[in-house]
Image: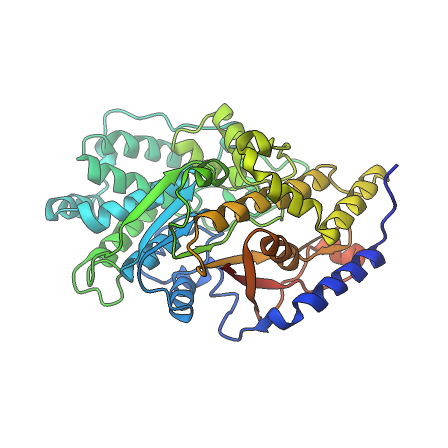
Length: 464
């Protein structure tokens, strides 16, 4: 029988760990929630094209590169997402490698690379024609829109027909233009659909017919497809046009090489040579139950991911959803025994896992997958941290944006737990930069356990 752990015991262990790391916590007024989220990208040319809502901003990457004196060499982002670290570093003349599992990230990065280096004046002219006139309306055929079970009925009938004509018409363009036209479509899918991304799932507008028994959600005006796609193509053209002052690409072409690896960082990292990178700047998925395979389902369907592919992606992702099954980490890399031992020895983490299992046994959790998810998250992150230590040069920084979380009343200090694990795996903690304003916890947590602000931090570890 597992020992019983109370919330007060978890709080005591958390306070002990805080005493150890207290001198490392630095409230950083320059770090706003705007900066460490996608919000600061919303009006920034190039980065604004696709609203990858889990991304941090290019301005944050630039701030960190300047603050820690990283001006040359090669950086790595093992959770590359839409490529913010890669493009911001490259624009500063730094080579950048990224690892990304989701096809949507690859599509965004590929399109931006083509627009930077491979687009010709003729390509721009073709793109402008598509912005100015609805070329697709004259298409004699339609290319069926790929769907998943969770995306069926996502668009008004007229919009779905327009998308299928657009896809068919795209095929008559040169490959580079096709890539950008399909990218523009990816950028507007959510806008023209009945859905809205909402962390753990897609919310559905009442007009979709999929809301029986659920709280009604009114998305408001859903733009016409022709207008939405024309506006997006025009936005792209504006941002790449010569003389656009705030554009990333026209004034100065990307200087650093960008390489992108396809797959999970748990599989890719062990294949990278040791002592290669001068810095790692990243933001892993948070331990917050967000399921990217659901929130990005419209995009994944368009990119050809089928039902089996969706399940595969969900399981290959870092454990951050309640549907993630346990990964056999030692079968992936038998050299991770030390990383798993570091997690085993983390006293606060083990107390939290015991508490969550106890809550599960008592029927107190709203989802029984929470203990498995939390355990998987920290053990997998321990393996990622071990690999980051291996591939970094001595004294090079690993800079990570992450959030603390709370389950069943237990505040989980992700920042301190990961920092403690990192110190067992070859890092020293330089700073834990704290945003001036913490984030709130869920309404359910507040209702049952009271309101408590949770730290949102940027960790700075140095390779020993």
